[in-house]
Length: 338
Image (cartoon, rainbow, N blue to C red; front, top):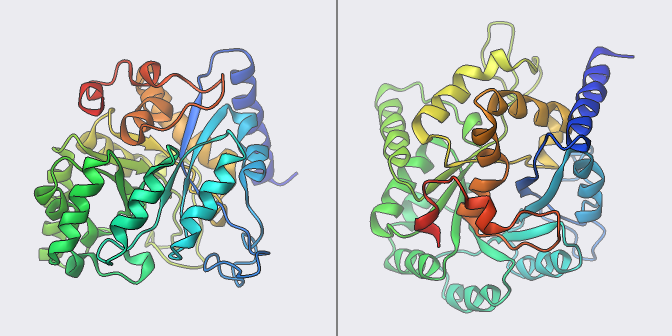
């Protein structure tokens, strides 16, 4: 058996056994992509060239991968800019109780934003929108529009969340957004993958924005896309290279994020199926489990399920999913999220 396969299998067995023995705890995955390329209209993502993940991936497919490891619920993250897919994923979610919430995709500056927000918000599974460069938007330019900030405040008033990938420039935009809409809960996606800019002024702006967001209790971070590719000189590369699996290789990055945002605002996120491009589900899960359990059980429980309840206020749909009051217990920001 190849070493990578052996480690994946044995790691999965260890995690499953811990759950079966009652020494584990429920896990909520805060970021999963659902899609079906066989639909007549197809899908805008993933691209057919991404052959390994270009397949139908629905809640039943996710459950087969995740439930053996103690995962009892997940939040579906929209990966389509098509407004009608917000309704499609809610229909899919309604049929499977593993889905405890969905985060959609609405253009915050379009005239129909409020109409769709009102319609979608009638469904309790709808927990917010995603906003980043993936959909052809320039956040820095969008923030300058009065209707954008007005709609961000409407999102906050509805008790919903703004998600966005953690690019260096987007962190500065999140500072500006939360300056103007301070009640808005924000979730920064995939911060471990964000590269520190090389140019000195851009690096200083990024580090300042990260520290500022770390001081704002309504800002949460998904600890995801930790695995990266590196060349022989230790430089990050887009293709080729190697993908280290050892926690020691990523500990400094995780320590920095932990020190800035603390134990109450970090969320578990698999980013599946996108995560498949860098490693197996057991490899990803065991890495974050090793890191956060190493900081104590209370910290691990916050990371794996309590903090997601504070950030998203997801919907308990079956008996093995924790009560929201139970999930928030021990979280010092619980009073601010209701």
